[in-house]
Length: 387
Image (cartoon, rainbow, N blue to C red; front, side):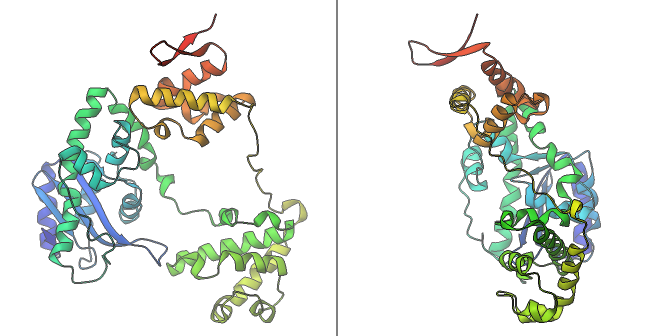
């Protein structure tokens, strides 16, 4: 069903009242805008599925009320961008959430599995992703586009059921809940702090403290402007140009227009604001100039990370899930660093949730010398207690 009228939307949302589980997906475009431009919202329940057109419908309230219902489990595949759209539309997070991509990783079907591969693995069905690069905001949509969009939720519910069955067999249902908590936290979807955006710019460590303050003000100005214009920040002024302005510190718009890479039209639109940002940076007292966080250049004792990586590989083979799902190289380095520097380990990522028992605590015992690794005659590597 393709929904383009308020009556259709109301009737479909009423049909969802009997569904305690919903499959949800969105189609969007975001090449040139700060926020996603949503073209379709697809939802499937017990009574069927629909592609809802938010461009032709002025009021999505009936749908948003359904999505906000905490009694209904919302199923997504690779939930991040879909939730960014829906949380913004709803004005709140919409728990509870289940992410089939996360679940697939936890049952050993591969990390970052695509939707097409998930459906083939779970249902033995091949679906074609022929409309991947469609402009979903252009109207009218073709019948093939609508069918393609509906397939993304039509098969999601049965795939979820297969995954749930497998999770129960492995006694890992609680694992998924722990992994998707981030999607139920409002702070996950907060806009970036403009005052920290300068930290994302490469080569900023080459700047002197006062120039760094200029860069911080310019990056905050650009971020706020990008939000208000709903455009990409780099389309206003590129990072390289912000760095050059921060180095040269122009005193007026004439000097600003001489900076390489700064479009003359933007000088006319934003020149005064930029010069004001530069002046503001020069009003900051010396003891309040921005400080860069220390880079993580700590080198752990030779062999420790290799030992932990070997153990992660062993556990991944035992659990039949990819090593990166258990602990990637960054997590392993962080774990070893915190241990060697005698930091409080209780808050370490690998000692939270299901990972604590599966990987974190055994790794801690390994580093404490309580256990070691042994190769059995069969070639299997196992943990052994050390007296």
